Image (cartoon, rainbow, N blue to C red; front, side):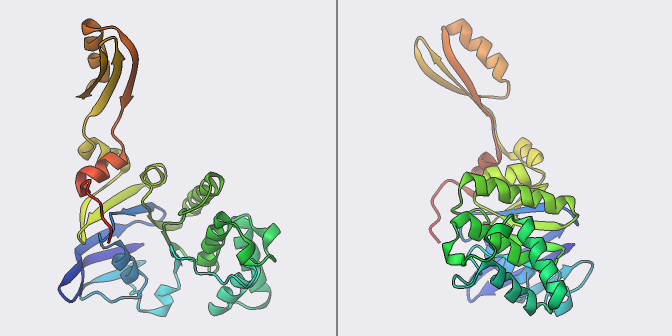
Length: 282
């Protein structure tokens, strides 16, 4: 559905994306992860045609360029910064965006109702967006990205600042899009969401992909060892191990174990091992 081949983008002396290549298949949820300044935003901007690469090419659905309006029409984008008008109702927002794509009359009404139902906002369709909760705004933002029925969707931090119920609803909607055969590119700083949702994940930094695979494969290759943590009569002990059961048996021989738990590597472990633990403010 989407191919980036040797894509490079610079801003003066800053290399934002450095010969990036990706192949994203139809019907998959693809996680694009990285710390601040990794090049994710620039990559997404080239995918949707807001920026042109200095080198390389972006191909949509077998070869079309996002600079071509017909190809760009296949793309829906829900940006992290909400693309909504607060002083319009939810329905008016969607009608406005639908008209930009040429929908009128019964077709427009059908699309508006379909996406309102999808994000479960039909009962608040005529309320002004400024009266919506954060979670409702995020769901309407997704609806606006889907109004023209695109096959490729880019969701940039779609659950930022929402309550657990809204987060669950958004993730369930994305799973439903996958079942419909749509392709979703998902950027997030919530590693547990990517681990739960994505078929494959690319972790990038400094404009390059550091690792790309399924979540399980990334954890197996880059996650490191499990950590055994035990409270014993002699105090707390922590040990890295590939065999938590054997480590537990060894601890029992040395002291009485009062409590015992295992912290297994996860996608966050992989992310920190590959990109480092120092803070990124820009």
